[in-house]
Amino acid sequence: MNYKEALNHPIFDIISQSAKELELDAYVIGGFVRDFILSRGDAKDIDIVTIGDGIKLAKQVAKNLPKKTRVQVFKTYGTAMLHFDGIDIEFVGARKESYNESSRNPDVESGTLEDDQNRRDFTINAFALDLSENNFGNLLDPFNGLDDLKKQIIRTPLNPDITYSDDPLRMMRAIRFATQLNFKIEEKSLYAISKNKDRIKIITNERIAVELNKILESNTPSVGFLLLEQTGLLDYILPELTALKGIDEVEGQRHKDNFYHTLEVVDNIALHTDNLWLRWAALLHDIGKAPTKKFNKKIGWTFHGHEFTGSKMVFHLFKRLKMPLNDKMKFVQKMVLMSSRPIVLANEEVTDSAVRRLVFDAGDHVDDLMVLCEADITTKNPKKFNKYHQNFKIVREKIIEVEERDHVRNFQPPISGEEIMETFNIKPSKEIGLIKDVIKEAILEGEIPNEHEAAYQLMLKEGLRLGLKVAK
Image 1 (cartoon, helix red, strand yellow):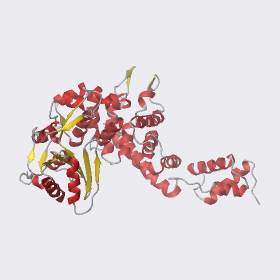
Image 2: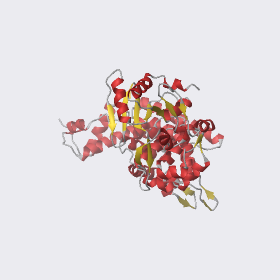
Image 3: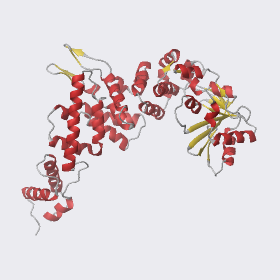
Image 4: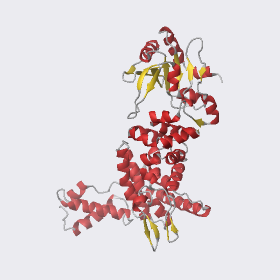
């Protein structure tokens, strides 16, 4: 492979020239090189290591760029970053690190390129491309990472026990890379993760959430969650999921393993959408089943109200992981709360009123809800599988038909509160809400069309029933 091809972008010539002017050695290191070897598309992040002052090199590069470019300096970390031509470039001086048990933040001192490669998390992230004039494009691969790429193995450059204990976030990163790249974690490394799993407690929840998001965004998220479960990390990170594991049996009656079912649903969702928050909804759609599980002698295992319980658990889970508590979290809550509604519809005769209520409650997210529910079909019985999908097809067709006719998505009542007050010459009062509710229910039940005249007549009728008089 001609590694110079990785350095075709003009930025590399500018970095090389700038390093020469400062009499520094500079290298492209890490993920950029790995992704070039794997042909994983155009990178938007480049890491540059120099033997010396990385901040000084960044400023020299900015000076040599064709247009004025701002350099962001992070003195605490000894790094600098600049943005050029859609690419983020980070500069750091080569360093060696030492750790203490209570923190993943190391004590740092200047070092050689070898020191810097030794501190890398995995062999496949320790590649370096030389940017010096005489050796431009030469690959330095001290840990035989090329062989690991060919064998599709995640391996640490040094003793994995020390690597993971020093910085426990690397355990999450190992699992994330294994998921993204469809690689295997080397046996010793996998054992070291299990051995050091309790060290994950020193990692902030924000950092853990970032890795979870990247696992969820991969093509087959179940790979990562199975590894998290296998190594014991999932008990620390998402105990709500591990609580779903196992099959209980009473009097010969069993229920499915909701943990493995959940992972199937997440993989199904990943085939149909890139929406990270819908993937989160798939991951959490059944978390309410563990606390609501009961055995009834007449009907077997029940999970009554698990959707409502699960939607409340979403808030606490997002808060714990320091994830956004805004409309993204509310979307996940809504999907979890409504996750069984289309399934119930598909199992019964699909009435217009039931579909109207589904569309009314789901609003703009009704299509996402249908995708989630279709992903929830994990039966291995071909006859049942086809029947469920056929029923969902009927529900989808009914949604289109009802929506075109009744316009209940993001429903706005045909009669406003102002019109009610004006008609009956009243001030703001509970009667206004009562009348609006009656009109809404009548439209959703199909008793009147979603039109002003029909709603107006019902308003008059309900107003009189409440003892209101039409103003003259």
